[in-house]
Length: 202
Image (cartoon, rainbow, N blue to C red; front, side, top):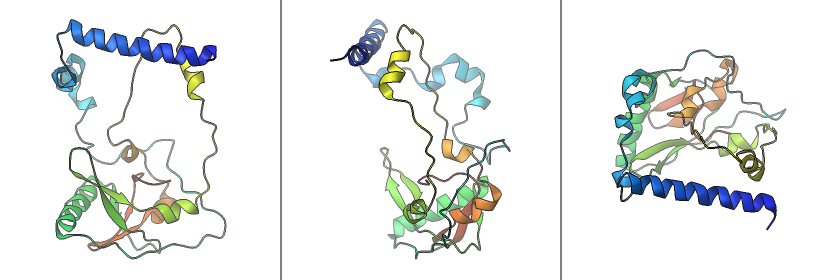
């Protein structure tokens, strides 16, 4: 193995040992015994910064989600997929929730994509818009991503690590107004378009 690869393996071994040692020192048998997020003092003190759900549309920011299309692309519209009665009930509830939060609005766009549900680990259903056809005609961002082994190499000697994960991160980014119509989707209950970045897009 190369030196860098050995370093990567060693970092993961150190992290695994640290995590196991921390659990043992606290008398924890497994992750089920780990403290709840609500028990962390900073989360309790700044509860308004850590909401369980997003209250509504994000504020205007310098960066907006853009849908760049291949030149000459015409609007794509597909019929809605069939759904079971239980899925239709869930669809109606989730659509209403998205409307109430301002994440989407009724649409008259010539674009239209079907929706489907994907089961989450906890058994609940996640609403997904099938943007595969739209994705085929978008211009992809070619920004070079860093290599994982280079990132691990940069961590050498570090002793403090942080992890940031946004609650419904996609919904925290507004769509450029002229691109909103391209996100339109069709359901049994109407034709809608997103005002924030949707899951499954691009």
